[in-house]
Image (tube, rainbow over all chains, first blue to last red; front, top):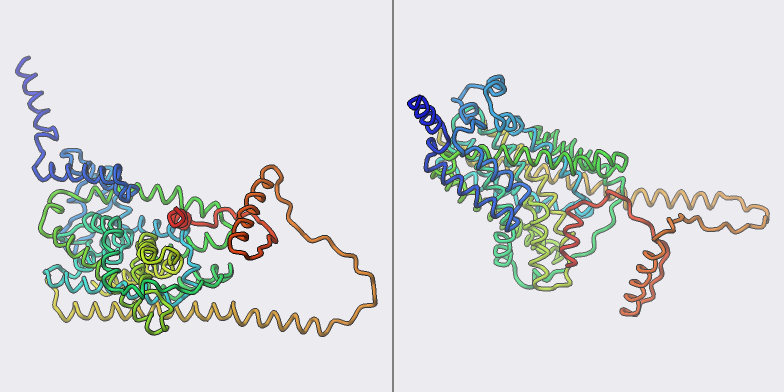
Amino acid sequence: MFQIFIDTIDSLVQSSGLAQMSWQNFVMILISFLFMFLAIKKGYEPLLLLPIAFGMLLTNLPATEMYHPELWNIDGGQQIDFGRVLHDGGLLDLLYIGVKLQIYPALIFLGIGCMTDFAPLIANPKSFLLGAAAQAGIFITFLGAAALGFTPAEAGSIAIIGGADGPTSIFVSSRLLSGGKYDVEVGTIALAAYTYMALVPLIQPPIMRALTTKKERLIRMEQLRTVSRTEKIIFPIAVTVIIALLVPSAAPLVGMLMLGNLFRECGCVDRLTKTAQNELMNIITIFLGISVGATTVADKVISFAFVKVIILGVLAFMIGTAAGVLFGKIMCKVTGGKVNPLIGSAGVSAVPMAARQSQRVGAEEDPTNFLLMHAMGPNVAGVIGSAVAAGVLLSIIK
Amino acid sequence: MKMEWDYAGAVVISGLVIVFVALILLIIAVWVMGKVFTKVIPAIQSSRQKKGADETVPAPSVPIVPQPPVTRTLPEEDDNEVIAVIAAAIAAISAETGTGLKIKSIRPKRQGRTSAWASAAARESVM
């Protein structure tokens, strides 16, 4: 009987997580604790960072069987067997289906559309140019990723971090990094994207100050005209039609963004608007965060490839910011000093943090200069611009 | 599969061109819409009003009974306090700047029209 007891204890110990824990798992668990600390104590994007960190913890606790990378990382040419995922998958595999099928990013865009006021962009449509210029960060980083030896799919997934838009990064990377084995994962791309979005207040202002003169930072912009309700209703419909016809692969993101905005502006579906921007958005954020966190398995994060993703990601962000500011300077010259170049940095789509940095840096020179509403134009144009850039990458990269 | 530089360059150039073309098309669409709503429609409306005024036959002199202005009744419980606060704030600004300001109407804001982001940004700017 004693021997049976010893065998039972031995088999329990052997099958426990502690016995199967590798040093990589241990490091990842410590990183997840760090992210939880940053989210809870420092308030860095807690709504997303906390579920991501907890997903990271769950997936790196050995033997929990909640996420199975082998169900998703399959050899090239093969399709993911969703039947097998449903049959053999754990809870996080099931939630991850929404990422892999690009459902969550599109639904997040629906909520973002409900929360976004496009009036500053409609009042000053030239802001679209700044939103387009800031996307240079995406495409220039694509070259950098190519130079570092990444495949086109990996390079596209890394480059989209420069769009400074978490859902767009997940949308592109989950589509491109499908049906093959890659050195980078959707989770690592999302982790880098959200980390840099949280670091916008640290990354952008030094670039903005370095590229502008005091005189330019002091420029006051004319007050924007009032936009009628009819214009606000026509805008999402027109944008959907134009973008979907020109870049069909951007339609899921732009279409949902504009549907959300139409909900908001039409004024007759308040219940849907409130649901999309609150309950639905919160539910999807939980699912997205925890399942993206689950993909950060140790061997994908503790690797040289992840270090390269981190470096390229921050470069993408910096180039996007610089391109926006430089284009703002061009617009400043062309308009005879009517455009403050600081609003150009808001062309990266981190809404509304990027616009707040324009306001903040402008206010450092002149506290009575309010650039926020002017910066919201390029900022929301950046959301559309990065969605278009995502569509372009998806349609070009095979 | 490593990338060839020709391919990478083609992705960059075509990507930037397509993004700019798409957003320039949007600029044109929004600009046209703005012109229609700020110039064309007001012009049509004013010409119609002018035409209507010209075509109006002077009516026989019937005494016009002045109508009370159509006003929206506010719920009374706490709105008097709100109105008093707004009036006091405007009076303070008016005294400070030396400009004469007059309150013509106070209407409650439509619910659900301001985004959480806009509110947060406004709060941050004020505080």
